[in-house]
Image (spheres, helix red, strand yellow):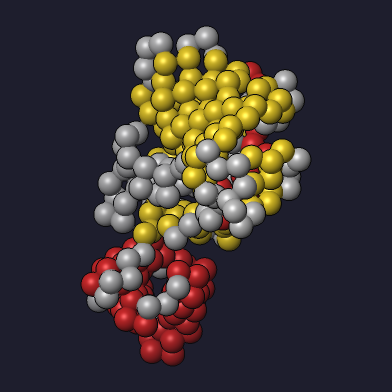
Length: 290
């Protein structure tokens, strides 16, 4: 067996063991991924000590890159399998990309998520901004086949309807107990105060449970219904050419149409670091091609 093949299988086996430990220990996702990175980089110096003479003609960069994709997939598969068996399910999805563009997400076994599925915390597609091999920005969104007359999509809690003439209808229920929903409502109204009796103040407007009101934000009339404690129902009409304007910009970052599909991206970006993005308790890992 060639020396580099020894490194390949050694790294895959060690990564699988790291996945097993992460699953059994119930490590949170950030800690689990940190363990993988530590193990991944330790394999090279250990391999040099074990097979140094055989690896003397192999560059360090090549050694560090050996089995990068296979070892990470092995780690994820074992981790998720063990975590699920232990009742601590971890939702992890993948994207393979080396350049900027739109990419549907994939399951760990490589299946591409279809337009009618939204497993990644209510999303199924991402837009990557990659420069010089490094990710500069990640947008999350949803896509579907364009329909004649009206196309309907969902961005997490937000329903988006797009007419052929460019009219947008944005509607959704937003729970103040959800960090993402609360962040969006604060971006929309600024100050939010919830009283013990259930009444709520949105900006400077007070609404009681069961009440409704209309607010003009920018040049758009926002219909607000407050039927349940801590849950706000919003509805308003905008235009696809006014996405960058408030308040539409609070919900949608941008819209693209490509190959008979419509892609809508959320204005709220995921929490991300290097090549891992998190939305609620779901994680997305961006792997290089190959």
